[in-house]
Length: 240
Image (tube, rainbow, N blue to C red):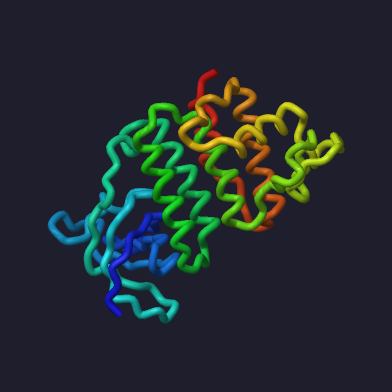
């Protein structure tokens, strides 16, 4: 079946001397793996290695067989093209971080147009915004709602965030509860949109601590989830 679909590059793996295997999250087909023959040496073909940088957004045409094996891409075009993501060192580090995150989260993902459109829109936002320090925390908290373990908004008036059940309560016992300061920040992120996330004020230590906490929350609720190796680099880039 010939299918045209928007797609987001999650990750790639070198195969042989000239090939790549690309993991793509597509709007129409969900998560798929594609064999890209000769793409690492080709400069004139329809498929170019520059198209398959992490989180690049594409419009692809694929002869989809749906048999669980590697698929093939007949055509690919970058759409929309990023202006800054692959040239700005901080943004490119955020992209590497979320390439790891999304590769873990979207392993067997079925088509979900709402989730696809969300992921597509946030990286277009990242490409255009000048303020990126709070982007990762906001995006991770948003993704919890798509993964089924979002914080319980019905308990948000209570002071402490409980990482084990995702609710707020009156218990301040560590390590399974956030501190009062962390809990306040979580509420702020849950209660704002991307256009206003720069209004949440944190210093570098507070931001790194909260990012670690949210990663811990993912590991509690997704037992196979691993802390991204790019997390250390990402945290080092943000100044006070």
